[in-house]
Length: 264
Image 1 (tube, helix red, strand yellow):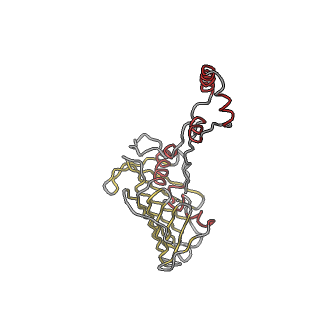
Image 2 (tube, rainbow, N blue to C red):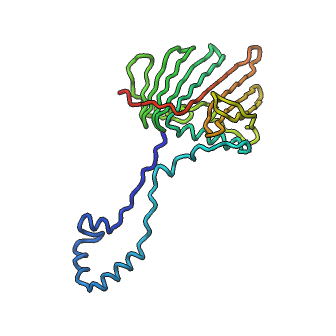
Image 3 (tube, helix red, strand yellow):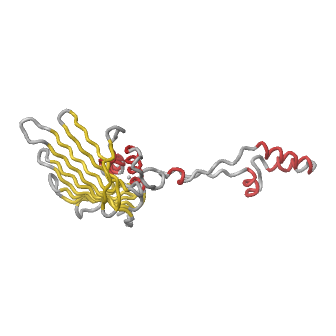
């Protein structure tokens, strides 16, 4: 669901290499020639070389690329910033389970129930139960860059990389609502509520475009800024027919510990 962390590069000084291998950056012959000089001159040159050498570079670790830790949310915080942070925290969380239910009455209709479990930033187990159109149970396991799929109890199959890239993209791993782009004027704080016993702030977004009306609600934990619940209703008018309704509801719980390994 991935982002590869940048591995730390360790800068090793020439003095260490010299002691480890028995020869410096130059040749062993060069070191032998230096030893013919008076010890006072050798010491002065060594001090001068040390003062001119560049300072040790900062070692970059995964800690430099992690999102800001969870923190309490204030009612005065900008709604867009709160929701954007909630999305990033969910994408990097390593122990959660989210359930998303979608219903759409367009054409033959569509409905599914998807549960996504995370065991690390790059380990996911996704089970989708499609209730209409192509009924069945579809399962996916994501480990790093590799994705494995199966339908029902059929054998697991490793997915080609071009398809795997789509399945591990952020939009496939978290509720769709959190991937939308919101402007500061459109997303507003609508109040405070309790979700499964946790205090939250509810943020609301409403838009009307030509023949479409959309309402979105996002509940964010007041104590940790993590998304707890999302709801979206989209209604599109259709001439001489009933409107098309698309609803999506999602809930997320945290601290869920699971083990996810490649199935083959």
